[in-house]
Length: 127
Image (cartoon, rainbow, N blue to C red; front, side, top):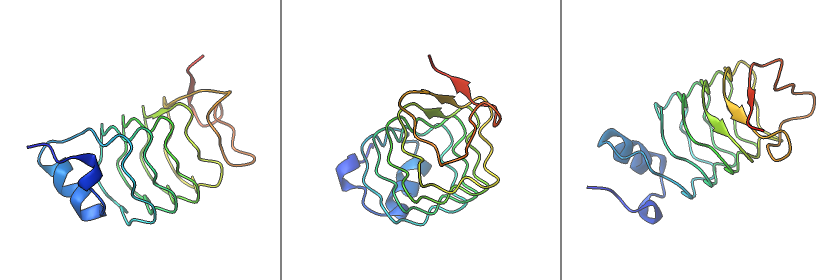
């Protein structure tokens, strides 16, 4: 049974729903949660509020993070290969050691930290 996204307010609830096969978490509000090391491969987290979340070491491979708010999020060592980062706010996120190869981004809408070079990190321009 799919849990309504509005009812998911903790990291534990998100991980439980994911474990039961749910992948659609669009617009979920999980600011400041601890998802360090979480396996969320292929999850739809578009438009999610994950500001200040600890996603260090998380598996976000192929996840849809389009238009998500990741301000101040810790993505150190996270696997974001093939993720959708269209319009994503990563401006104040920590990306140290994150793998972003083949992640899609929009050069006009995706916001990266100062000095971050998406081409050098292997990201793909969406347009």
